[in-house]
Length: 282
Image (cartoon, rainbow, N blue to C red; front, top):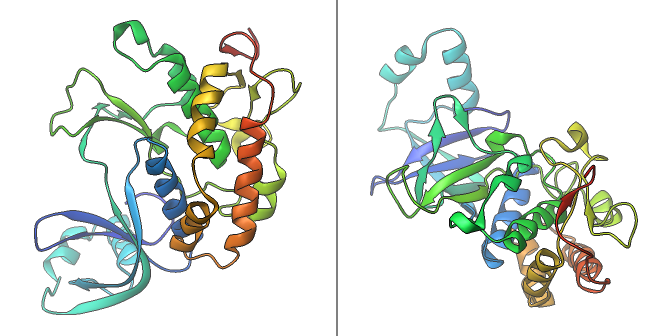
């Protein structure tokens, strides 16, 4: 498995495969809060839940590092041959991830998508509307989804077991570094404004975040996109907002709730966005 966060895949008795992340890492609360929010607002997202205890049969003490070392030295087959499925280890205070149902669309080694590619979506051919695309861009900035390399977004045929569908779904896949830029970084998330540059424009930018914005190009979004996301965000009550952070296992939920509502106000209590979507350089 890729990345540095300790994790392993586990097959349940019903044949379902889940991903378990363990150990103290801010990725766990970030993924729980962000995926729950994305679901609540109608975006595609995997399901991530906090679980008190997972009992893994056949797991060594450190499954992620053991597997990584075995693969590094070409000993993966030997490791698999020595697995004892009668013995188990318990992992506490973990996250359990279930993928959004549907087959991922990939081409060879090419997988995922970059935010600069969203401008290719054509509503006249059945794609999302400009307002929907801009709402997704705004959602990414709201979350501080700065680690937006192509592998961290996924193109999927939602609800299908075949990677061939007429209406694929573009979704944000890996949100473990969100609410940051340093993963659940309340101070920086709270203090970074939603909009960039001239307030008369609805300009979005991640240039001040790590990787100089990554695949997210500076862009002025449409009024339709601002209004679409704003109307959905403003429907969330204070209790619902704080529940996101309680479920993620955070203690300072009141501070997170206040920061969240302030960001919502920045979106809904501003003048209408001028014109249509355009890149900052156009």
